[in-house]
Length: 160
Image 1 (tube, rainbow, N blue to C red):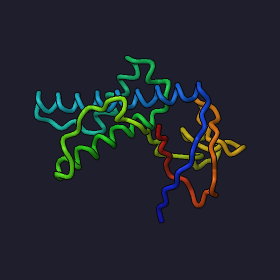
Image 2 (cartoon, rainbow, N blue to C red):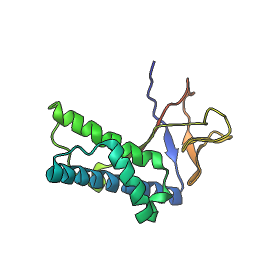
Image 3 (cartoon, one colour):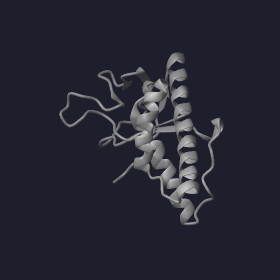
Image 4 (cartoon, rainbow, N blue to C red):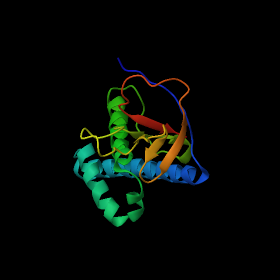
């Protein structure tokens, strides 16, 4: 059984700035991937899939060092979002994907949560020893656990 639960986090001002900057990087990556996909199709009539986008992201990280500031998982998850947007478009469930403005891009997804199977290394997001969210680059973030967590957390979505 899958279950979604919402909890409120209380980041410090510095953490808020970093999270907002990360959201902007995700938005810029989404818009860039959308433009690349359109450009590739217009030039060669070839598909530009998620794996091509991830290879491009690796090159972009060498060109733009600010992309190294954030974990790679949310940036890679941007391409999954773009793929879903095109899937919905081709099924005629939605309009053609458009570029996102600041107000339109409000969340980022961490597809893995907790510790790796060896139990020693953490994924990008996990709980610290004192029940706070932990990220290596952000540190500990206060979270209000107003109800107990049941089961295992598979992914985490942070919303503005």
